[in-house]
Image 1 (cartoon, rainbow, N blue to C red):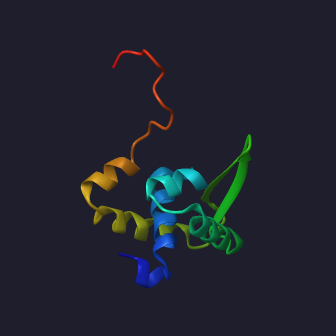
Image 2: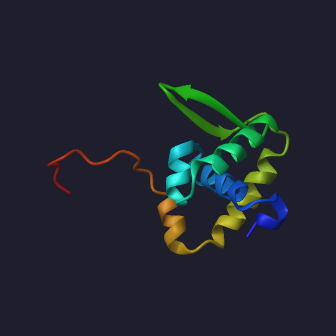
Image 3: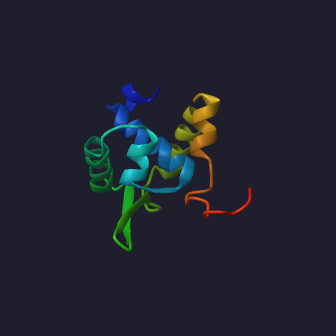
Length: 109
């Protein structure tokens, strides 16, 4: 949907994922969209070098999120929120799930 504006599908995927979840890591994003990690990493690095994203280490995992000092952050987030509203319901609900860890073995539902 935003591919013509952003230049690539993977850039759109990264930004939509982070807009929905606030934070994410490379493998999580690539697994969600069922794509190779290499192009996702390229977009994450490009956006981080451009100042749109920041990254931090949590253990051995590099987490990415929106840079609060980016001057067009509010405008970018509002554009992404509007674009997310046009995504299919199943993708939106999967993106907005808050549970990230697997359920403990034997735990009742």
